[in-house]
View 1 (cartoon, one colour):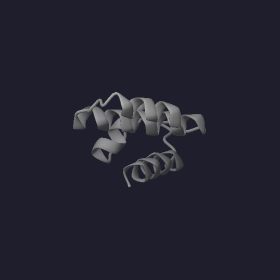
View 2 (tube, rainbow, N blue to C red; view 1 turned 45 degrees about the vertical axis):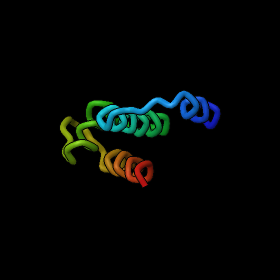
View 3 (cartoon, rainbow, N blue to C red; view 1 turned 180 degrees about the vertical axis):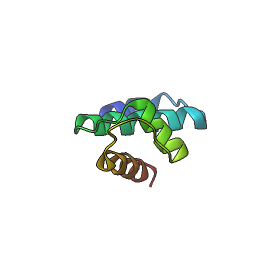
View 4 (cartoon, rainbow, N blue to C red; view 1 turned 90 degrees about the vertical axis):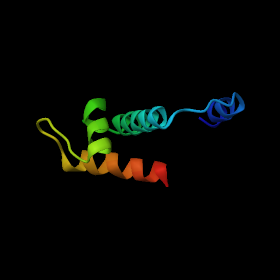
Length: 75
């Protein structure tokens, strides 16, 4: 991950705010998915973008994981 980050910084790409948010949402989704989070990318995006979520059998733990990871990423 560190090597990838260094390469990324070396090419001086600047993302738009929208692209940056999208990448952050994808990162949160993929990271927590590896740990068993059941939310989809669409649900994660909806949750982090609008503070709402739709669907069935949504676990509170999954919501808190996504929100916590996003908060940690942005701090």
